[in-house]
Length: 406
Image 1 (tube, rainbow, N blue to C red):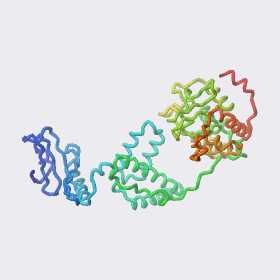
Image 2: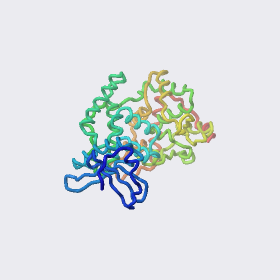
Image 3: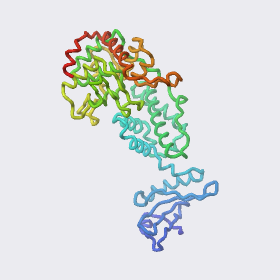
Image 4: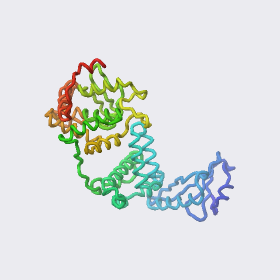
């Protein structure tokens, strides 16, 4: 080993591979514990740090390859890593930055996340946690999380975009998710600094629905939409209670006209449980009409050619148009809530209702024995549909006229 004053020129002139055929360390004369490791068999040169830990063990950690990082930056990184070693912490955790963790998470779950979800995670982290992007996760403390949480809410409120409390909570939910992901990969990562409800603002439970007296006007406004895809998608959600993405990703391969079933695969549901949904008369007529228009090459029942996904992602603009026409302002999940409300008022069994909307049947001993067969759900599903049709003011039609199209 040698100790020399490292400069960019000196590092460039160091021999690699070393003539000895063995690795050689050249220690920096200015920063103790920082050096360049030259390979004995390749031309690689690597910045490293080394220090004796409080328990007496010697720890050497790679900073970066010399051809990937300048000397000044490497020396700066090394100084921080040496401080971590002096405190008995593992500087390897420095490689797990918030940015690298986000990238790794999105890469691992790429096929399981919708484009909206990916964009949402990126937006929350880049917009509100940008100062932490290049920081190691173990530099983010519970105190800094609590401080930033309050700051986010104030920034949004000051910008006139609402109180900001719900958004601040959502940002921290994303941070918690990413930290848990990193923790599964690295067990030495400190405890998650996001302390759930203790730090978060209280959020009122959402209870918005299409009220009974609003149903006729709402239904009429939906029928008046220019886009048949948006129109049918909104009605499909209202009359099935499916979640936004469950309905949006429906393919014709999932529609079984012969058995009168909609077969949603597990990977398309939030609960990751497959859902076989009875096809009521209203939904069957809607799907038969859509099929008569012609199947889209994408295979989706509700296609969208302007989206990379190929399916309708978020019918915000159509719902805005509906709100303008009838003064009923709702989102897609409000339609699911409306379906569940009407189903409860129709007095179908709680277990049947849970099964229709793909909720867990529960952990009760008796409920655990119940196997809810799809045919058992056909009558309750139709009962809810009949209630919705009455509320919307839909005039009964002769199903025989539609059946011939199938």
